[in-house]
Length: 415
Ligand SMILES: *Cc1c(COP(=O)(O)O)cnc(C)c1O
Image (cartoon, rainbow, N blue to C red; front, side, top):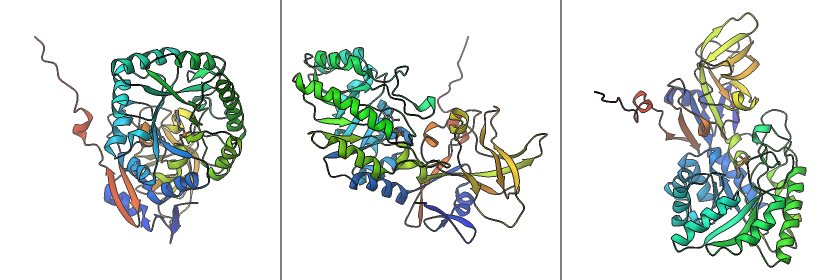
């Protein structure tokens, strides 16, 4: 379903004109539809009737207002840092529904997570297991863990967002996981509660999920036979969304697959979707500064750059671009480029757009891995973010000021 629609030539979200928001808050501007998030969340949550918990992967969009929306819907959270856990708590999320993933958990991060009483550490290596055990013992606690296994399946997605193959840094190779579980069972600071995998992002087929689950379930059986019984299985995130012509499975189709395969097991299902919950709930609005004739291409130079949205530069991602107001003018074909001094600074190439200087244009599907991956490179203040719900707009992040850019910098006093 599309939550951003043209009404009388104006792109609207929940009846609110995108142009009006751009004028009110200036650009570059992220706009999110709360209804879109709610509908996708409910599609996951309500299409399955085995015990389950949807844990939103915070890194996809970490704004505390988005986290709050998820929390009110009943979400748990998948986090990858102390900062993300702090965001969850700040937004009123329940730490006892938090899964802590990530390959590089530091001592202070593990201590904080144990103190806050998270649901589970998704352990990604042997030395991490030792570290968690030691810290838990020192704190006189038992750390609940699952092992993130790397099932060695090809997620058939971009190599930079593929995480479940032998060559990736994530998880414990499935062949070594059994031994690590046996070892963990002897560690007094560790309580084994589950098993975890996450094979990649933007998956557009069910087959890799299905293969991964089969492999993980073989290990579950082997563990059971050796006296280690698990309470949950965490399938990670990764379901793809429509950016262009993809036809990814729906959340319902995906959940049905999981439910069918898990019938007969006494395991609670945990999933950690990020992108699929928020990507199509968001747009990035930017203003055309100049139309510039080139030798090979014409350029539409806009005021959002790779610092605001890095996906095209980082993953060659294709994202739809269109106007915020449809005018009766001739289209030109443009490379839509930003202000940053890098040739990879583009939002889209070869786009046919009916635009003039000063017009607002929109990049769609920008709600995931958009703002959360942004930076201030080229000393560009980070964008503002707006949440729209029931026809009302709420500023959920102020635009950075120029002072914010060097707030933490210090001029040294030298002799
Ligand atoms: C990034 C990530 C997710 C979310 O992935 P999406 O593709 O955004 O759904 C879930 N779990 C882990 C461990 C991750 O690293």
